[in-house]
Length: 321
Image 1 (tube, rainbow, N blue to C red):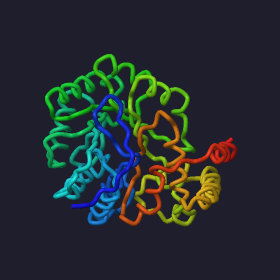
Image 2 (tube, helix red, strand yellow; image 1 turned 30 degrees about the vertical axis):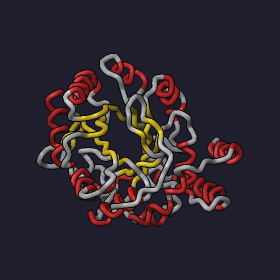
Image 3 (cartoon, rainbow, N blue to C red; image 1 turned 90 degrees about the vertical axis):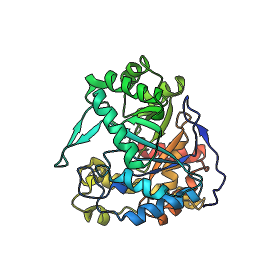
Image 4 (cartoon, rainbow, N blue to C red; image 1 turned 60 degrees about the vertical axis):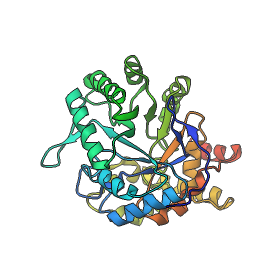
């Protein structure tokens, strides 16, 4: 049993979930060898990272069926064996794969139900705390998929239901069928477009927002260098992301130096500055922080309850102009 540190929590949307500012992101824990991998990953390191974060007071984990083609959920289940208190577990549907590992997009009712049953089995649980549509694709199946999520909630297989990567129009379509507990969008200082419409809409409609990639897939963590980017494993999907390529790479690495300068005044890492920046927005309930080892906690945990000053926020804004 772990002694859990007291940490401030916030209510997630219309749910009874009180979640900590930081949640464990289990994407990279899916390991290598699939289309959106982060390269090879040691399962024991993943399990140790989850347990260390829970011990530090983080009370939720975000995973998805497609991460490692089911493997991430299995790793999460192993990490939770015997853990008390047990963190909330959030997972997602709408991405399926065939026997060759080819990933497809599907929101048909029968597919959603099958995915839920498979996730329950892999996670070794009777109920999922938050079940989310991973991507609003195919767009024409959103209504059917969301209706099925609402049925799964009514049946008690999932406690709360949310969406990920939806725009405002898609949120409205889902809301017409059943209440949305949460939205999971990408949000960082280099990809902040959701500030214009999506975040205000969520705030006005009591939709919780759990943002992902506040450090832009590790780019703003302070540990990423040009050399490290160039030596990424062949199956690390980040190689294909524009922010990891020129001309944006040089700009982003210069931004990290500004974050390092700001953080140094407070004993914080660039990653903690990046996460704190995202958490400053009143619409943001919490942030998903990807972990691959217990040691990574040291570079991110300080963001949980520390915030930037107005002057520091402006420094960042001036750089990004």
